[in-house]
Image 1 (cartoon, rainbow, N blue to C red):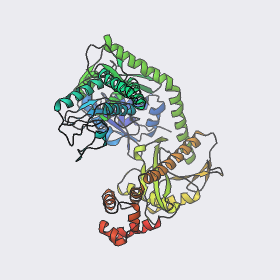
Image 2 (image 1 turned 90 degrees about the vertical axis):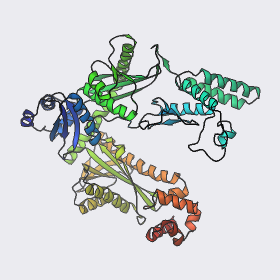
Image 3 (image 1 turned 135 degrees about the vertical axis):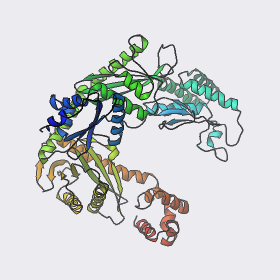
Image 4 (image 1 turned 60 degrees about the vertical axis):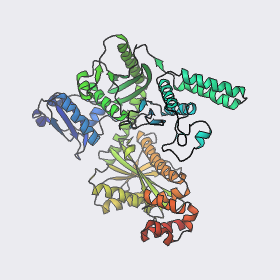
Length: 589
């Protein structure tokens, strides 16, 4: 694809620092960057030979804008702000956008220990330990603490003691006045344990093991022995001779063939507790992208350590000024050895995965190019749909979104459908209409392609919806053979577009087809698994959380609700039409 000529615009671009925004033909921002010298950086995109992800970006650029700033720090802040606002497709996307879990010991009169993720909000000086990249390890640790120490287990104190009190795992804080000294002793021991000293807990477990064995309670003794093993495996940490028990992170990276491998070591209380690692494809200068990555990472993490250690290739002053935090670039000593260790791990990770990563990305890009060639137009963002029925009559719908065959899971959507939908075509019509009516009304960007699961019949449904909304979005259908395997593509004019059986395109289209089917089926199953009454109410359009709770409170069971008259349901719902819909639906299942 020919690149657009920006020679005149580039000559008028200032040489000052600032942030720049690349746009596609629809005016959508697809990349945001920063530069000390805007003209020099922007010119480099269009005058140098590009490869990989950068080449695809440049081919898609239809225009660019920039905002001049007075300093590099201002340009960094602006860049991060715009990235958060627009979430451009070519900027770094963290593979796991969930925050890492921490273990929290609450600062309450009767403390609790639990796994938490949202650590950005103020926690009243609660003790937080982590992060734990492995959530199972965090939960197992909390389970061990709760089994050994009779802490409060409930969110709110009940009116009387519960099962935990009777099995010795709670002191009965709701019913008894517990000595503050006992609570403080437990808190000190738990904090010591979380900092890496397992000797106190290990001693307690061994004593309990001996008692259980003496009482011939071998089952309990075995359970305690397994708990000791869990401590050894789950809480084992690499001790570092750092002379001081401080918290800091060590960050280093390795680059090769437009790929960046990053390693972050979490040092807590002088112990190497865990690490984070990721590989991503690079567009801009890797040093700038590392800063962007670090900022995104800590935004997700929620907590920044007192110190960050980085290599000298990263702009220390800029990062330090942005965070108002201590950033170190060691040249020798133990910190430098840790930094070198992070580099070695980053390099080993990239070299061991590089061939697989590159092959996977190359296959994906080949597939999207083949699809674009078949359709005679550039294709990037695609939306695929599927339905699943509930109890044989009620239908639910699912939509998945892909960009260059990368799933955008935060854009997936589920649909509850109206009660009068009795077949797949009506279900699909409603899903498609709701989806694209929403995009039309909210002036949101449309996909490059709609992917239907089927041939002419399904394509006709999509064409009818798109035509009724006066939109122009191309449509294809994925047609299966007699063995229910995707065989070929049919375009919106019913032309058959043959695909080779060993084509990368066929592989990725099949994966997309399987994903949307899985998504719709999972939604259907999740509704059913919530319990009979709750699942039925969750399935009825117009019944939200408030109405669902009111119906559950009033009738208590599916049997009683099904036996209720329209008038009885109407006493709860207050809307006669909605009450009749619920009554009608209940009679049909």
